[in-house]
Amino acid sequence: MLRVEVTKQLGEFALEAAFESEGRVTGLFGASGSGKTSLVNMIAGLVRPDHGTIVLDGETLDDTKRGLHVPTYRRRIGYVFQDARLFPHLDVLHNLDYGRRMNRLEEDTAQRKRVTDLLDIGHLLDRRPGKLSGGERQRVALGRALLAKPRLLLLDEPLGALDEGRRAEILPYLVRLRDEARIPMVYVSHDAAEMRQLATQIVLLRQGRVTSFGGVKVLSSMPTQ
Amino acid sequence: MLDITPTEWTAILLSLRVAAVATLVATPLGVALAWLLARRQFWGKSLLDAAIHLPLVLPPVVTGYLLLLSFGRRGLVGAFFADHLGVVFAFRWTGAALACGVMSFPLLVRPIRLSIEAVDQRLEQAAETLGAAPWWVFLTVTLPLSLPGVLAGMVLGFAKAIGEFGATITFVSNIPGETQTISSAIYSLIQTPDGDVAALRLVVVSVVMAVAALIGAEWFARRATQRLHGN
Image 1 (cartoon, rainbow over the protein chains, first blue to last red):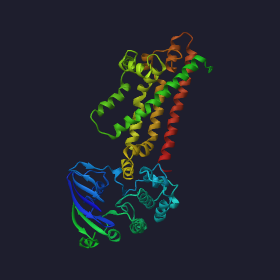
Image 2 (image 1 turned 180 degrees about the vertical axis):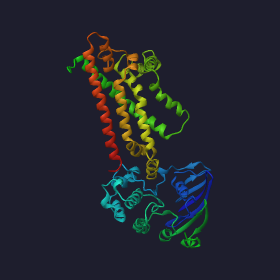
Image 3 (image 1 turned 30 degrees about the horizontal axis):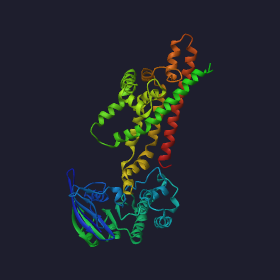
Image 4 (image 1 turned 60 degrees about the vertical axis):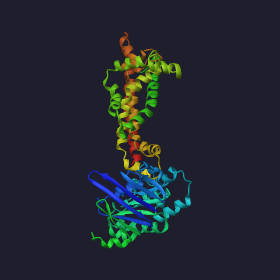
């Protein structure tokens, strides 16, 4: 369970968000500039809130009153960025293995096989990120985050940098991930169709504030884009 | 003409040793300072930056004399090193290495700093979300990605160290077999009647070494860039 209650001043922009999620996939939905990425960065620990608390599965990750801030690398929260951010100097195998090594986890070839099968990236293991297509890169980024065995997976518009065709290529993997990986996810998007397919719970953000919260049906109250 | 005498060989080998030791000792320190300057904001940052660049703009004689005052036997730092670590700099080849290290330091730091600045910080963030503590982020992402710059800095620093003259001769003098590098050997030969041919030999040697260093730097940088950028 994830509980977030934070405020953050970013120049002119004030972010003031509170929500609590139990769902398997919490969709953070809002137009660009509504503060989605800042919110996700705070959950990841990359940005510190000005005020407030972030609690994951009973563990307090941020509590500004107590001056508590668990650094990103100790949070065990996976993050899939819009721009993949694969390490260019490592091949796919070592990108996938990075989180396991940094967290000093035992080598788990069965798990790696499951993840590479799930994402169809088994044939790419010896390639460098420079030789991958956009869709392949994003699938490797997903696998890399999963193999670090996170407690929560943040996906910040993982399809945002891809064209229509590629999106259709990745979306089924995300659905499989939701149904098979058993890791709670926070999925950020401004695409209502994507949200309907993936999210089990929606947090609606508008200009830095949560305007509604609930099941996928809150999307229907939104003007279609 | 290229019949190099034992004395000249001594000077050549000493130059190589002095420059190699200077570069190897200066590199870790240079990488650390380059990282600080590239990635951290702190009080006195521009002062530190100026101090690193000082040997580039001060007359080498001044740098050498300051080294003599501080690292000489009676200098504050020199006495400490001699008494506690058993390392003497004054009039020893170690002093020549120190002088070369200080003089080449700005040239070593600059390319490293630039290449660290060029490393995409979003990759460092990604590493953090995968569980890498700051030190590991540096070792596994920042350092490998800035390797071309580190190599370029090392080669540049090495080349500068081989050619260093003013600070070295001021600090540790010109003792054959101990502190007489190629540069000071050439200087001595020019002062000697009939030394021209020998001086020219050493000139040829130093030109060859400098060109080799430049070609080597270029080759290293290109190879490393290729390896790092995913091809």
